[in-house]
Image (tube, rainbow, N blue to C red; front, side, top):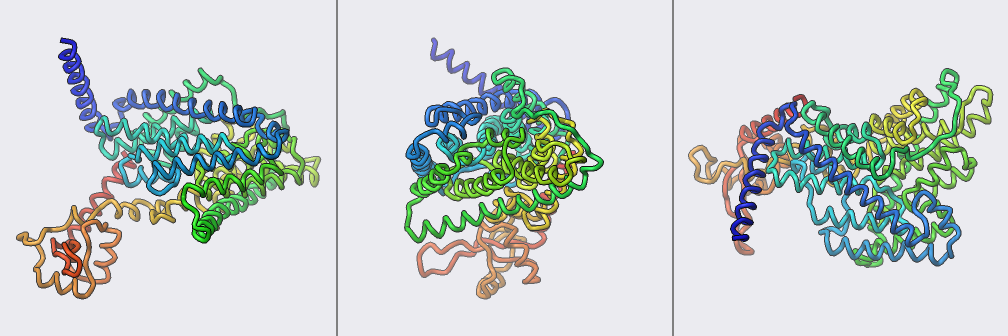
Length: 559
């Protein structure tokens, strides 16, 4: 009898889930309250997941170093040198073994992969590599890795959103909205910043501000923030001393600071990619297995940390010191240089983590150093050094992340200081423009471009990757298909496609060929035999599908 009741209960739950999935999918583009309950639940769930992630990092840091990130640097400075050296190596070894076993490429996932899933995969990410990446980042940040916790938190939220989308059988549009809710919740809970969390999801991940997405994303961000404040308190991450604001006289200084932060952001991003290239070459030259690469990076980090423990972990202690004017000029410059090197080593070593917090720390150090110089030159018309550090945080984050709007807001929400609005709003866009003009529009966009996905070009560029030849071709022998003779003739000229090719390859071929169709071939059954002709892709079908996909994308963005 109990098993029968259990079966009935499961059937009822399954029926209710199927009804909800159909209902959510039917009204995906409707700017009503349909997705809001789902967004509320996602916000709460992701909020608790991020809190657990954050507390786990703090607990492990305390276990290994004797303090969490708020006092990590000063505590690590008093530890024996061999402890500071060995902990990152052991952490790197654990990360390498974990990622080699649970991911196909031994690499940790982060924000760029979430952006890829929004553009090409209907808001879905691979779950097992995603969970493995979160664990790898947890180990990295707990054992001396010099990255941020927000990127892994965002990807962890994306894994949860993917599970929900699959359970609801959500369409691609709805899946992206659910993904945006999870991203907003992750950023909001990480920083206690609901405004920045919602705008980061729209600005960076979804890359539009459609009404149907805005409401649920805000609900999820607020829900995650409430969860964070209940358990961690309603306090800002950083506390600033009182400062004077002489905006009218200081505006040129903030312009110069914005330009400087743009240049430093370019150096940081390019250093990371350069280190990745060097790491690949060193690994190939030494024939290191993938699992050993993070351990080697950990050794390099441990050696750096012996001289400068300020590079360990997220870096909130050093950021706070810069904001409170406690770091002199040359020390701030030295910490900034070492921090860039440490972040590059950590990411090139494939140890996991994000660039959000490192950008904030580097910006605070740059702003603090710049402010000290400005105050020494013009003491009678300058404000405080902390104000320059605060402005540098926003400018650096906006240029590195390619997110000027959410970076501006996150500075205010992290510090609770809205007096500095004019200074930050001047420096952030200037830094972003400088970085973009120098080819560094966003760290995440550059990561995707290296993998062949150019999101910066707009949907007309990357949507071609979503349309495969196999789904659009006319099969061989169809009444409206292509003649076999003409297809074989084109194949003899090395002009043909495979089923798995996309319109990204097919459309340029049509431009060169100036013909109505391209043959589609299957690999030969046996080596040495000719490939099999299975159909043809007509240009009119390809263009029609491409236009329809673009229309759906525009309808999503403007609904």
